[in-house]
Image (cartoon, rainbow, N blue to C red; front, top):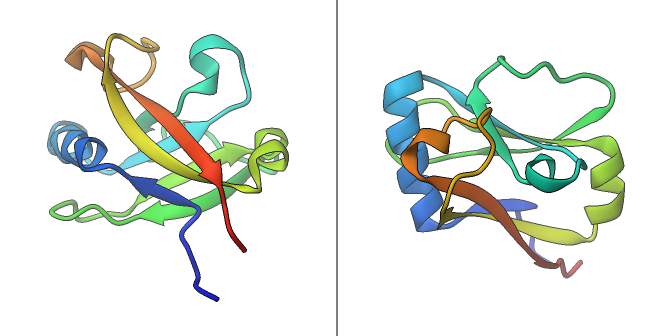
Length: 118
């Protein structure tokens, strides 16, 4: 049995995180269970989004050439629905939420998922 990280990054996501890190410093993600853009992973400067008892820290993502790990948080209610999946953070063209740091770049983060094997 192998330990598989619950969250991973595509090369495109890692490249974007390197650019955002240079511009904004340490970063974090929060994945809520909201509708529309609320269901996309939002990228913030680390600590700008307040997490609490209703959130779960799924991973601290290591990105080559980024000094600080990128924390990936998910709302507990969303985690209960997705706990059996492996999440892959990717990037696609198009604007996402105005609150996420990548919005001015003309791209948005999104989650691709597949069933996790135990």
